[in-house]
Length: 470
Ligand code: UDX
Ligand code: UDX
Ligand code: ADP
Image (cartoon, rainbow, N blue to C red; front, side, top):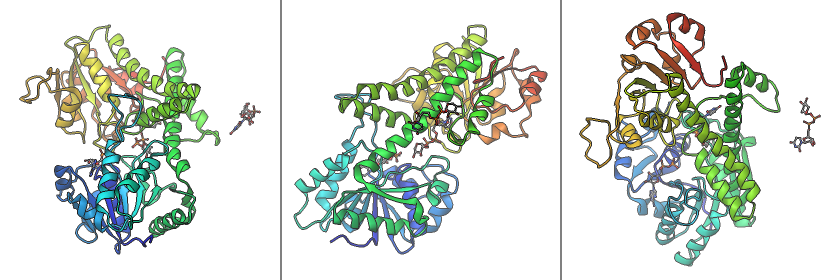
């Protein structure tokens, strides 16, 4: 009754479902993988030469597998019906209204997808939670399935959270630190777990495939992201102390990294974390703790978010203060808008908050990011002044520029918000950039991009770096 896996369907062709199942199809040519989504434009893009998301290495993988055993379609029902195993990779945004607004995950997309599966899948299938979900979501999914599905259909729910980071998705999927597969402690649950493990074992080291209970697996994803986000907030808190002393956070973090118990990763101070996961997962964890009657635990994790919001705000305030406490009508180059390098994603990007604060204070921004489209910037900040964007919203004083050099022309300050390699390149002609700017010319380095501030100061720049006291 739990069939071996020959046909996989993935509901949701987003940042998680797309890359995950593309790599799976590429690695398992004998399994038919169909990625389905209700968003027609997204599916159209996955079927075109211009994929809807930018991830290094993904284009080649999709090109090789697409049409062979990898398919993208809006036929959600047809894909579900044919599948032995269904990945649920729909979005789980934070609720904006109602109970738990601002904290709890909105499970309406998970519920809708589960209802579709229950109604359409005649034989049943292994259902795999891929999206990050609150602990015990599988329980609700089970209830929906038993209430709606025909009696001879067999379903088994697994939790298989995705740990890929954007910008390195393909690398992370090809060689994951671990693949978690959580199941119910029943014979059928273990069998389903084994079936999914067999799929991954085609390319993942056996030691990295870890099986556990369903609830532990669901919680592990929240825990891992909370611990990572907490490290970033911790080092940002230390950075604030460094700026008020004559310490340098990069020296402090390099000292900490040498302790193997602390480890070397995720100690880069800067302008705060962004991305679709950290904030949402922390909010989830806070909500979960509150609903379990653990207010002290909720308060603890909430502080990670408080520190993050403060870090972004502090960075913007510093800019205003250093530029003689007024930036009204000053031109400022914003270099980098994505929430991190090697992605075009702007979800929860710190750049959004920093730019809004600077606009609020009257600055005129010249924004450049190598991978973020101007329409994405428009959506994040509101339409640019003078643009013919039709939606009703106050127009904002910024332009979107085609290069770093162009963004700097006539600007009084340049502000680094994303650690793109091209900003760090030796090819950057700092002398020419300085010459093209208004004077005095400031650099606000939020991402530790400037490696030799002394050289830039010699050219005439006034340089400020996050976490560096002078
Ligand atoms: C600590 C630092 O480890 C050391 O580098 C510094 O120089 C002095 O402070 P110490 O206090 O001797 O050393 O012991 P440590 O091993 O760090 O443990 C401290 C406490 O944390 C103990 O009570 C230990 O049981 C507890 N602990 C440690 C946990 O509860 N869980 C852990 O995972 C690790
Ligand atoms: C994260 C987790 O890393 C991944 O395992 C999970 O599956 C999804 O969430 P992602 O959000 O894509 O991945 O990127 P990540 O590399 O974790 O960066 C998140 C944010 O933290 C970025 O804005 C980044 O710039 C920031 N960050 C990261 C720092 O500010 N300092 C650091 O040291 C590390
Ligand atoms: P993530 O970063 O978690 O992948 P995205 O928002 O990028 O989130 O992707 C989620 C995708 O799931 C979206 O493209 C959305 O259209 C799709 N989706 C949501 N609900 C359904 C549904 N019921 N059936 C099919 N696709 C869905």
